[in-house]
Image (cartoon, rainbow over all chains, first blue to last red; front, side, top):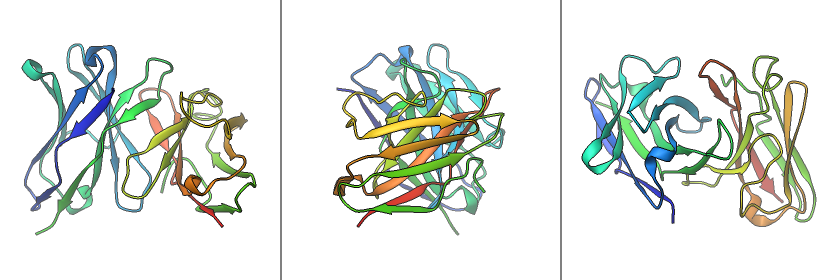
Length: 120
Length: 110
């Protein structure tokens, strides 16, 4: 069945970088857009952008340019989110989410989330 | 501050109906039929209960329904069950690679 399994929680100091993986199972990744969503503690989700899984072409939402990079490890077809120059306000759960083929702008499967905590 | 406005809380007794609103603008909810609703239980990832304003994903009970009027979308949960207690978030496409979420509504089943 469809599964999206993310890497584990991370504790980082300000200024460091973090790289989160999103392993997918049970479907053909190239048939779907791969989205990233941030959710700070007690807040609503924020859409960070999406990646075309055919060519790893990223599209970043406003507010997520510069320090945020979507990439793909092609040999294992695993998407990644990398965040550099981490700040305390980056502390949040980060989710990968599959774009549905039934309708645009709708995420039908989500990873379990990766908690990134940034503190000195 | 979230781009889409939801009431922070809603409640109802088992068997009752509850409606949660999501207010946007003519640039997002009012412009596109790309409204989705997500249910999130504590410590879990969001799960879609409505997409395309009114459509239910496979496996979602019929008691979940969605609608839209002007710049406001609504999620109605009929025949409330204890397992419906969760946070609910709306989302809407807003053009030019912009997807907005609401701040969330905590639904309590009394």
